[in-house]
Amino acid sequence: MHRDTAGTDESEDPPAYCLCVIGTRPEAIKMAPVIRALRSCRGLRPVVCSTGQHREMLDQVLPLFEIVPDFDLGVMEADQQLVDLTARLLLGIGTIIDRVQPACVLAQGDTTSVLASALVSYYRRIPFGHVEAGLRTGDRWQPFPEEMNRCVADTLAEWLFAPTERSRQNLLREGYPDQRITVTGNTVIDAMHYVAALPYDWSSGPLAHLADHQSLVLVTAHRRESFGEPFREMCEAIRELARRFEAGGVHFVYPVHPNPNVRQPVSEILAGIPNLTLLEPLDYRTFVHIMKRAMLILTDSGGIQEEAPALGVPVLVMRGKTERPEGVETGVVKVTGAARESIVREASRLLSNRIALAEMARSVNPYGDGRAAERIVAHLLSTHREHANGKAPTTEPNHLGTLKSL
Image 1: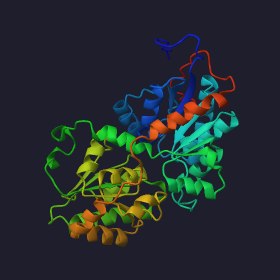
Image 2: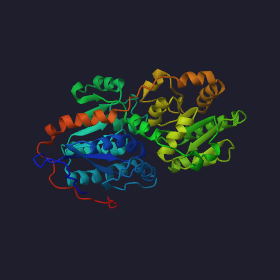
Image 3: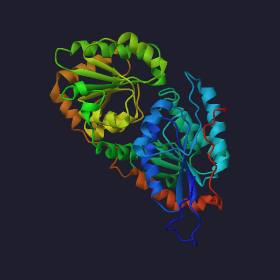
C-alpha cells in the first residue's frame, strides 16, 4: 500500500488506520459508503480486509463500489462448519490487526466475520465500531447464528452505530450507555441510492426477455435457520404461487444462492416452471434495478427489508421473526413465517388485490436519508485520537495476500 502525502501538511500527525472488515456481499454493500467516506477525510485512512466468507458473491459487488481489499483471508470452504469458520477468522483477523496496528476497527451486521472482528479487537484493546448495532428479535435462535453474533458484537463495541431510534432503544434497555450510541440511519440506503442512480441496460442483462414485463415478483431465500424442511416449505409455496398466478401474467424471478442447502431443494421443487426464472446470483446493480421493477418481494433476507421500503416495494418476510420491525410498523413489510400455507395466503391476497398492494407500496421508509456513512465517519473523526493513545502507525501495513494456510 502506498501512502499518498500530496496536499498534506508535514507538521500534521500521520493519518491513523481504520480497519474495515467485510465478509459477505451484504456487508460489502453496507460498508462501501463508509469506506468511500473514509477515503475522503483527513485523519483516518481505511484499510479493507475481506474475509472471503462469501467468495463469489462478495467479488461481484466490490468493483461496483471501486473497492480493492488490502488483505484477503480467503476463508471460504464448501459447506463449512461454524466452529471451523470462527477459528480461522479469529486467527486471520488477529494477524491482520497485528500487522496494521489500526486505531480502530469497523464491521457491519451480524455474520461470523463481525463476531470475530469484535472479539479480536477486544483482545487487542483496540476500539471496535459496530455498524448496524442494536437490531434484535429477542430470540437467540432466530436468526441463527446471527442474533447471537450481533449481541456479542454490541457487547464488545466501543461505538454502537444504531440505524434507527428503535435500535437505540433496544441498546438502552439492555443497559448500554447512551454516550456509546449514535443513531445514523442505515448505510444500505446510502449504497442503494448510489447504485439506483447508475444507468442500467435491461437488454443486455439476464432478464432481457422480461424487460417489458410489468408484473414481476422477486424471490430470495438462503438463511441458515431455514435449511431443511422449512426451506422446502418455502419452495413449495413459491411453486404453488407461480402456478396459481401464471394465467394472470405474474412472473417470478429467483436468484439462487450458491449454498448447496439452497440449490438442491430449489432444483428439485422449482425447476421447469414456465413463469419462474431461476438465476445465478446477480450483481448488485442488476439486483437493485430488478427490485425497482418488482411489484412484490418474497424474502428471508434482512437487508432487503431495508432496501425495498426505500424503493416503495412491498415485502413478505418468510421467517418467523424479524430484527427489523420498523418496516412492519410502517406497513411496507409483513412477516409470514416459513410455512407454505401462510406464504401462499398472504402473497395471494396481495397479488389478487392490487389496491392492497399499492397501499403497502406507499408506506414510509423508516431506515434513513442516505447520509448514514457521513454520520459514522464524523463520529469516528471526533473521537479516534482519544482512543489511539499514540498508536497511529508511522509505516505502511504489509500486504498479507491470501492467507490460505489459516
